[in-house]
Amino acid sequence: GAGVSQSPSNKVTEKGKDVELRCDPISGHTALYWYRQSLGQGLEFLIYFQGNSAPDKSGLPSDRFSAERTGGSVSTLTIQRTQQEDSAVYLCASSSPRGGLQETQYFGPGTRLLVL
Amino acid sequence: AQTVTQSQPEMSVQEAETVTLSCTYDTSESDYYLFWYKQPPSRQMILVIRQEAYKQQNATENRFSVNFQKAAKSFSLKISDSQLGDAAMYFCAYRDYNTDKLIFGTGTRLQVFP
Image (cartoon, rainbow over all chains, first blue to last red; front, top):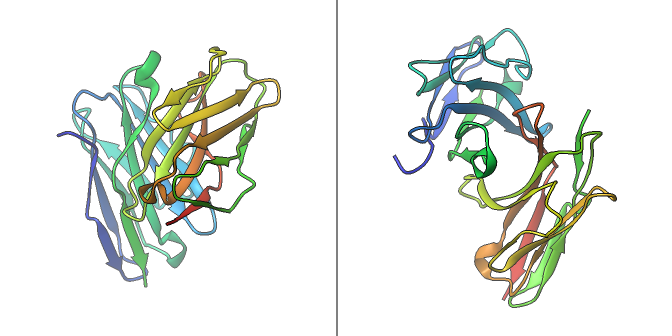
């Protein structure tokens, strides 16, 4: 596709339920990132995938959060046993391999998660 | 650790006028990238302009230009001939060669009045 796509656009869930958020990066982009945007914390990095390398999980806030990337393309961010503080917009971005202008990260429209 | 500071939570400008959004950052690295992203109510983060730290020339994209002062660690965004469609949240972001993640400032909400 032309850009990064994310689904669902909005998700409402009950506290304690698990949720899965999906990201489709730009075709050919080997790097994929997840960020979280919340009122209290601003924009914060969660996890980063680059090709076949082990992901950088340094930004995941707890072990309830996990992400995988299948076939080097689509990624799923999973939040288990959701809490109200997980309510936020989850943004996905992708970029080309290292070098020059390819360093730019292009963002999807985000998934707004509301935990009741 | 690297940090990015946007000291203006809100700014406003009259249509067709010029406005400057401020951004400062802290890093011990010499090579890095700086970005300005725009986030309208639709939530989509849109790249406005980028600057490589090794380039002395300030980046320009149509009505958008930056004033990059490496020694002062300052990276301001100037929007000329402001348009109603420029109204959005603007985020300054930093990335260096050692990490692949973006570090964002807290954002500046820009209002444009007709």
